[in-house]
Image (tube, rainbow, N blue to C red; front, side, top):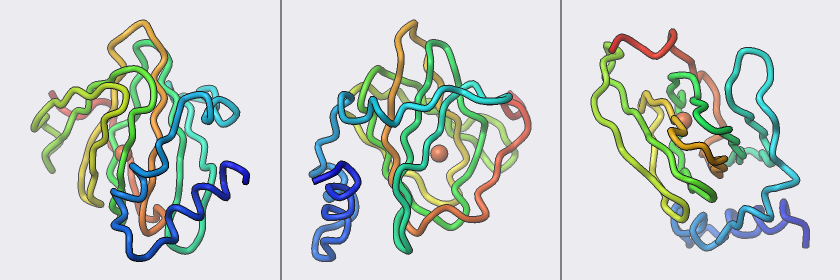
Length: 151
Ligand SMILES: [Fe+2]
């Protein structure tokens, strides 16, 4: 069974809630190695869509040491994020782009985002961070916001 087949199988179990299904995958950093994408263009992080169907979109995010994502929302999708390797800070913004709160997550932890969750993920460590993201429905109308917001 390929990695993609394993993902498809786990996520199509209708009786299993989304977040439980993602936890049941028990993703390991070794499995994600082939899917690590280096940062490109102005992005400080690598982002690789590894699976997508009508219901879900699965993305592997690679944050090199001290890198951060853009400030962004998730359109109409909810998502589960699994920190597979390393530790990161999750900065959550208000609608006016002021920082609402800062959360800290380490390997083996998960967090949830809603479509209107505006956030940024930052790797404050000298070690690589790999995270595994599952969105439902697939991302559309998700947008990024200028710079790091306003404070
Ligand atoms: Fe996000």
